[in-house]
Image 1 (cartoon, rainbow, N blue to C red):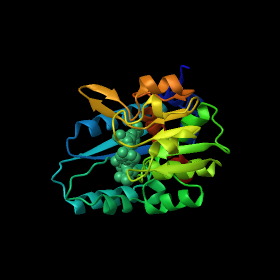
Image 2 (image 1 turned 120 degrees about the vertical axis):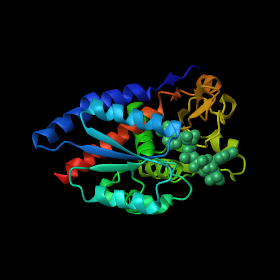
Image 3 (image 1 turned 180 degrees about the vertical axis):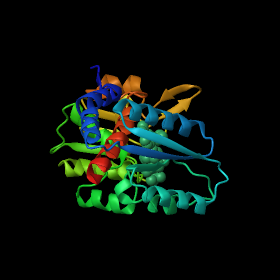
Length: 282
Ligand code: NAP
């Protein structure tokens, strides 16, 4: 078997053309230009590259984006002041703080200071709480992107067994909840899980967010499963995911590639969240 490759890049472009641009035009008709501010602290190469991708997609959607850059010597108080200014600026609809932050700054304090209505990364306790309660909210971008990818591949999760590898606050936990809300039976695995292979054996869908390069290979994947690879690693200048694509694509029915899978969908979800925040402000 050779898996169908689900291109997140193509799905993101379709969502852009068929949905996001139209919504932005509608807002502009009401004199509202959705605006995203990205706070970038320090000089991390990977962070700068992610921010550039976000700016590019924002431009394609027709929304405004501004990157506010700060030295890594900035104090926690100064960042909190900046966020406070953004919270009260009605021309800004969404704000994200690019992680990681320097060690002397509390990520929790910084994220919790964002006004939940502008929290387009969906990381504040209020938005996470609403997500878990099944209420309408700004859903964090990677899980939201994964759900869009599954929808685009016509995967109906009702009654399916979904195995998620990883329990982080930004991927594993929220995507598990979203799958369960779509009537899947979810098994959430982590580094202390006993016999991971047994948890994969009856999976219809496998979502891998372990942060370990090529952690899962074809031998562990049941025939015909759908595989979503969230991981992203730069190994000697070559990008790969948490799944060994070559062997996995011989067993899966559909698989997301790295690069070009979950990454572009995460960016797309961020821009959609900014548009949602602007729509709610109108
Ligand atoms: P993370 O915070 O490091 O969490 C990794 C999770 O995997 C943890 O829950 C950990 O278990 C689990 N894990 C690690 N080793 C394991 C093992 N041997 N067996 C089973 N579970 C294991 O990572 P993350 O932030 O969720 O990100 C995961 C990956 O996705 C990373 O490669 C990251 O770069 C990538 N990512 C990509 C995007 C995108 O847009 N494409 C967005 C976010 C993240 P414990 O909880 O027990 O430690």
